[in-house]
Length: 452
Image (cartoon, rainbow, N blue to C red; front, top):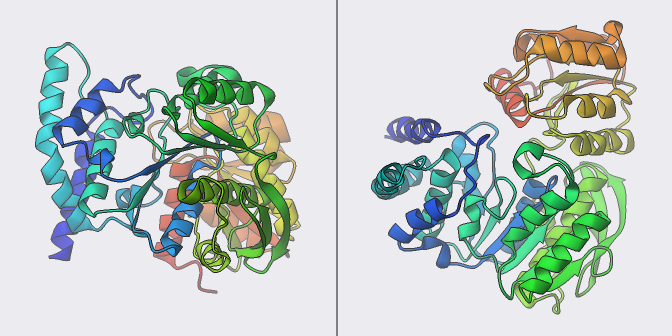
């Protein structure tokens, strides 16, 4: 029976894939709004913490959800994209939605999605996209569970992202920088303006430290909606962080109290930053920033937090790490973490980048710690051709440090062989989330976490 549901759950994903993909979102809310209206507005059945930004959205969402779960709340969590299985996107009470529940909810919502599709086509508009249909499915699944609170990560942007049919009591902004410029604008201010669209009337806003132009946009949006605004570093901040076995010890000055030396099983100063934003978001949700969090529950929430695909160890002997850095800011964060938290002397990057990303910027950032690059591509049809990416890498670091492979497995195997031939060498797979997900699947199949 479980295999039947597994196949049926995979069928749900295939049905969604038949729709227009996530890379080309529709700039509209009316279609998703109509879908959830027909479903009885499930997004109104629970409070929402809505999270947007350029980097750190998923990790911040996951840390916040973990803290809320430590408080005994039944949580929903929507993140994207997934790494290995579609179910990962819709998390209920800390676990990816089960195949049976996914299929049952899909069977419930599909007829209503088809009604909306027909209405849209009749009006000369495109049917619901992959992400619009996913959003309706997730909101319905959370209402069905039911959950006490949902942490919702924006898919792209904010104002016209389909998740914005939900009204976040707390609107959260991680650092905003240039990404998805064709869809969101070619300046940080323009991107921040689009993202600020998640701020609803009389909401509570929490923001990471931002550039001056981004901060202006967020502040104005908060004022126009008569929302409260708590931003880093004035309202909260990372007090300190130090390397620890398996992660780091973090002290955070929250909105309501300071929380000292909590163990966070995630690597990198950026994860301490994400944790600070998550703490401020939860303080804001539970007590509007005036009531300290329970230290024991916060400690539990941190200790159980995970962020798959973000500086995650997937292999030993040799060390293989994956990181979902897919823009220059993410690559810069990755290189800083590799310097501070690990003692590698030589690193090979297994690199694949989607065609619409700033590949030159990513390579420039990684080159400062790279011994060599194994250039390849993911199975995504949006992936940059490996030969084209190889030429770009050669122009940056030279031909002696650049090796091109037609598929990820060959690139990984050769990188593992190279790493095993030296001391304190590591393999880091990065450049796109799809590439990271494929590497994680290979590692699981080959049991790379067992010493050979």
